[in-house]
Amino acid sequence: MTGRILEGRHALVTGSVAGLGYAMARGLALQGASVTLNGLAAPGVGEAVAAALAEEASVEVAFDGADLAKAEQIEAMMTAAAGRAGPVDILVNNAVIRHFQPIESFTAAQWDASLAVNLSAAFHAARLALPGMKAKGWGRIVNLSSIYGARGAENRIDYVTTKTALLGMTRAIAIETAQTGITCNALCPGTVPSPAILERIAGIAREQGVSEDKAAQDYIAPRHPTERFVALDSVAALLVFLCSPAGQDMTGTTLPIDGGWQAR
Image (cartoon, rainbow, N blue to C red):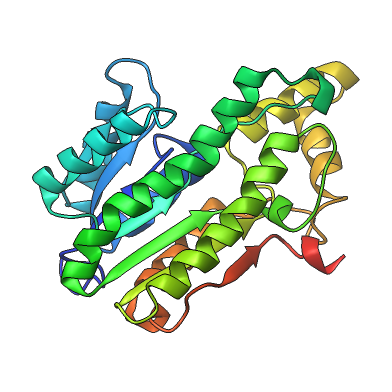
């Protein structure tokens, strides 16, 4: 396949075995980037996902099951990725964990895990990718924040806190790299049909004794004026735009893609 705008680039997307992370990795691969997938998966699952994407997109795709709660595993992942496909040109920090419970119910271990995966992992991956990007004079770092980077919500203190902090990290990286050919931006999706969200909606449907379609509609309507999910492919397309030549002058930005949620 020729004429793809990301030919010769190497992308690493965390939390990308399924859902939004996979959709973004696929979007990059279809534009010619080689891809390193990452996520926690059952034995063989990540490798199978990588093989299927490689076949579809005709690019090199590998899977790395690094536990992002551990800095040493992030370091090993970045080293292995660079050895396999060259330094990472495009870094997408998407991995996330969350706990739905009141603040006083959080344990220290839960809080520390959320900070490690949602925030510290993004920092470690960025600091390790930057030397290679600077050497090339080109790089794209995209941090996945959320609508909850701009508003509060009950029973999700870890998610709101870390997604808000990622916006500050984005601005800091953007300013520090402004004259290097590297950009850093944050995407802030609304509700997407990820496995975690669909599982949550299924649980609501069981609790309320309604269909999953009805539970989904009731879940989305108060949030999105569009009254539909934000499409995974729409987020992927926005990511590809940021990585394209047209995105070269966008850095330090916070880009909502939320079905009008922030306009309410």
